[in-house]
Image 1 (cartoon, rainbow, N blue to C red):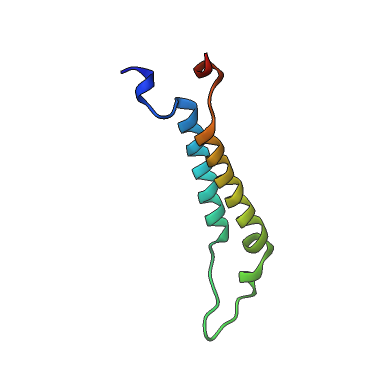
Image 2: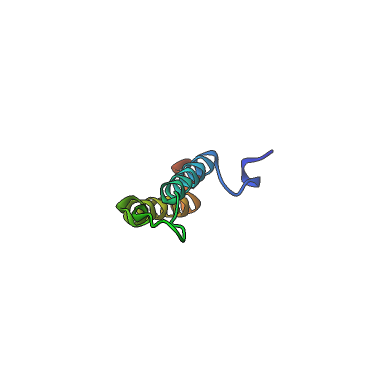
Length: 77
C-alpha cells in the first residue's frame, strides 16, 4: 500500500496511544471508594482527585489533539 492511503503516520498513532494512556491514568487517579449513607469518606475531596487527576486528563486530551495535527517533516517534502 502507498503511504498516502493512510490518514496518519506511525508517529501519529504512537502519540495518540500515549495520549490515551495518559487520559486513562487520569481517570484511574480520580477513581476510588465513595461515601455511603452510613459512612462519610473525606477522601473524595482529596487533592489527587480534585486537582491532579483532572490536570492529567487535560494533558492527555491536549496531547491527543497535538497527535492529530502533527505532521512530520518528511511528509512536507
